[in-house]
Image 1: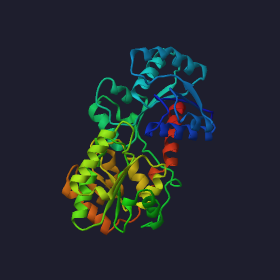
Image 2: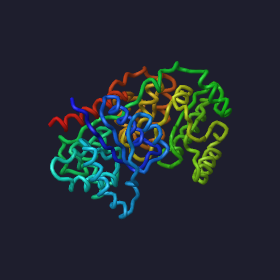
Image 3: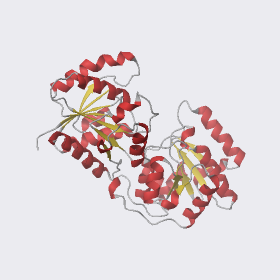
Image 4: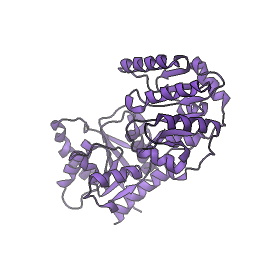
Length: 370
């Protein structure tokens, strides 16, 4: 098989699921002997990308301004010079720039692939993500969303390739894991004790459902459980007013001594291991829900609102944790049941990183071979 040249387009290389997937596919390409090129503004993940053996071209193709379209000729020139086989766009504005660059490239242009990483608001602007020769959907929920809002899309072009995790990074932990819990309690003493620890990882935004988690904690403690709650990632610069709001909610509910609101933890696998129940309470449907498969890989039950990609994963992998959205009574009942009777560990072969990488490279090859 001949060597492929794949150019991935995204705004920047800072953090997030889009960036993580970009590096994961670049790594798979290089290890398979192909050429991996990434076009972005750059960012803190640039050194790890280059350490993989991938190449980077610095262009600010994610800045929402008409001036950004001045990069179209530069992209067209790049595609020609590297003799690109695949142009893979992972975000809306970079996808538009790639689309226009390809339109003027002449005979046998590179194949155009998009990945719908999120459930973007339907619009002509967002429609570009459904216009690839192949459209990678990170979940069945995303595929159904695109077909519902862009009914002219050819279903045959939409390929569901779920995100994957490296099981080595999220190894199975004993249940319970007193050593992991002790390490967390050493940093956050209010999380000590013999009662169950609830974990809600997520950014400091109302969309992540922190208020729902606090209400759940209050319910469990009122029923006699010495439950504790840790919300790593909620503490962020510029979110002080929101954190003060959460602290006030906790105080009003009488659970302020049983809760820790902290910055993101770099050891998220250890955080899962320390917990007894992981929460995924996003108020807005998410496209996938990586937290679900990470926690299940470690061997922890997950409880979440059954909508979007999170609901899809829970219904498939751990149905007892899927709760009708925003039903607080059902959430509390399910939490008590999962804590009393943790479900058996699940096998997630389809959600391993290697499966995602192989499926994506297979999609590239199918286009080129065709």
